[in-house]
Length: 185
Image (cartoon, rainbow, N blue to C red; front, side, top):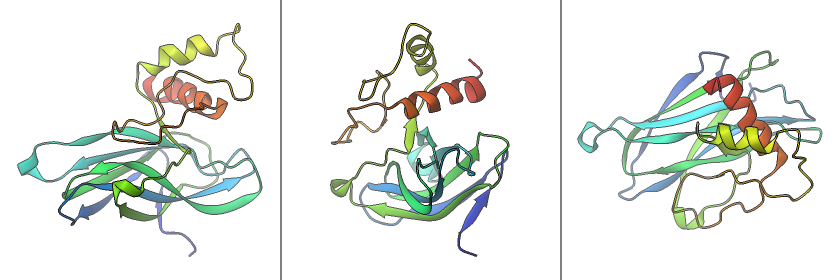
């Protein structure tokens, strides 16, 4: 086939990996994306937890991957997930969007030097506190115009040097979907 691992709704699956380097490394996950919208791949929650017992439990905050593209294309895209210290890990991929034609597809896991970090706007950080913010902002009195900034945090890693300054209506849609369908708020 042309793709790697598939993760069906609603169960998803796991990938075990290691950071064998003796310093923290950025974790990127390569996934299949397509367009035009709506994508036939589901919005998917990604979490990572440490399997190294001596370091205690370490878990990255969940991020949500939006595999949709606005134009006609079927491609592989990278997603910055977070920074992981040396050790063994498990990546959990859980599709949260029902009714899609295909399961979520991961084609690779990569570790990279944090000094070479690049933005991946398909990655959305959504926490339960964001649900109140997005409901207020998407109420009937608010209309999002092109380039308007939303006050939602986009990346969770405090070491990120290039924060995405402009928030998009796509991010607001992802937050609203996660709040309604994952957090139930």
